Image (cartoon, rainbow over all chains, first blue to last red):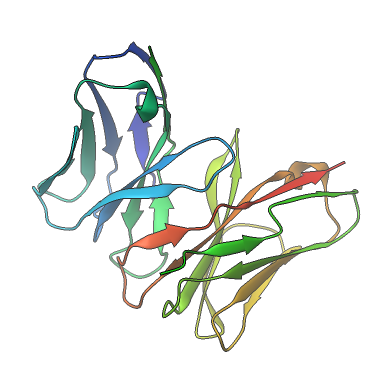
Length: 112
Length: 113
């Protein structure tokens, strides 16, 4: 059974602080995506990484795909209240037996 | 281009009833997948359809079913509703090939009373 563990599960920080969210698995993925979801809405795609070791930046967000394509991290610099939400990572199937497997989620709250 | 559209957005059903949810994918996307999201279980994969055929299926009972039409629009049906079926049901569409990005709709909130 493929599992995608995210840590931490919950995070409450002050505006301006930095944070890192981790997404780990023992499985290799063809790609990895990060989403942010706000209450009552569907997840919104933030980034897709496909190459081992790949780093992508989206304003204050930095995403990295592990060299072995089994893990990923999301780093937020100078967090703002607008970053509050549920962050989900999703691993794409290599074998084609499933489409995507989703991580357990990290619920972030940034306090003003 | 228009995103993934799901209807209805909110609905309340009684135990034992059945429900049908609808999803219109992004234009040109032929793969549609469905997910159930609950606070306790997170995002759980239900099934995926591609070119009107179910390609992958998650670990859900047979009460959960779906179909896809020739225009790639999809429906999912839950029969004999149980209280535990209360959840946000999300539809996502993607282009062809494994590992392609999936885009979600806003979801359908189902409450079973």
